[in-house]
Image (cartoon, rainbow, N blue to C red; front, side, top):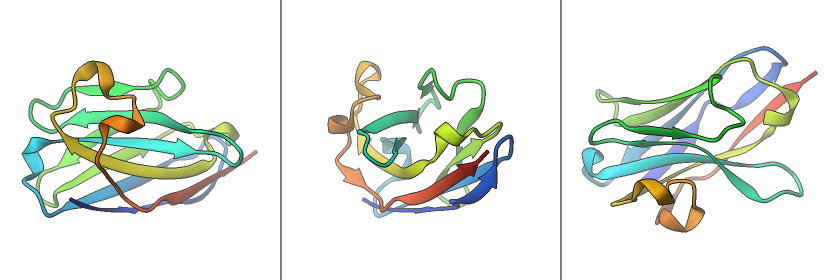
Length: 125
């Protein structure tokens, strides 16, 4: 699977951004797709995931209620809509995908076999 992330940028606190992850090379519906993020000097952390068959979603506590992960069937993409952005959301955001990710493992980097290049999100105060 090839993943192409886009949509990063700079925004002021309280603003919104939408990230997109284009999924190429595998039947879209078989995958779980997730977003992770990594701030400078920190570990890469789970943000959100969606199982494309069934559309169940998972979020980290830090973004729940502010971020929404969804699929766009027409474009084979997974979007991450981010609202009420805060400076602590500043990071490089990565999308990842894999088939057969069990619910309890969605937050784990090791559950995902394919990764896209990151896209920078910068939130200024």
